[in-house]
Length: 143
Image 1 (cartoon, helix red, strand yellow):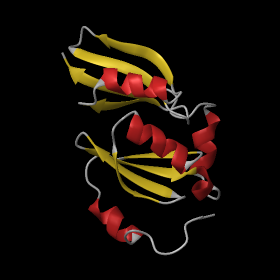
Image 2 (image 1 turned 30 degrees about the vertical axis):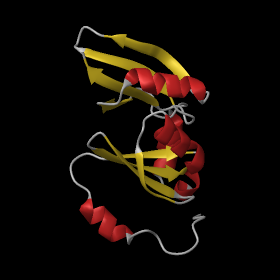
Image 3 (image 1 turned 180 degrees about the vertical axis):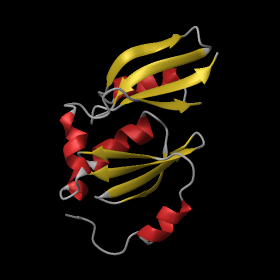
Image 4 (image 1 turned 45 degrees about the vertical axis):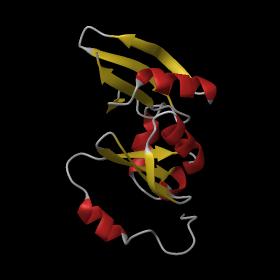
């Protein structure tokens, strides 16, 4: 069930045809809560948002959020919740996102820091931060 009233920012088929390479589509409980994390912790730019859907851009990547209710009749919904935790086994890495700033913003806004920013042997400084929907984001930058 869609909550948006009025026209979308662009026709869905036009946006779909514009996508290239790898994109992410994350199911979230509440778009506004998810956007708080995306903007304040990750420093992402919101290209578009409504109560059902959002497009974000940052660090050379683009990703989407869909509210849970938009998948109420979709077969993927069953698979998405079967694991018991959203995104189980997946790290969502944002290369070039300062892990120290992201961690500070996460703490300020009450998000869980799974692992504090640290220098790693693979040449990156990274932090592991959990958003309101349980997705694990890893902002990182080269040492």
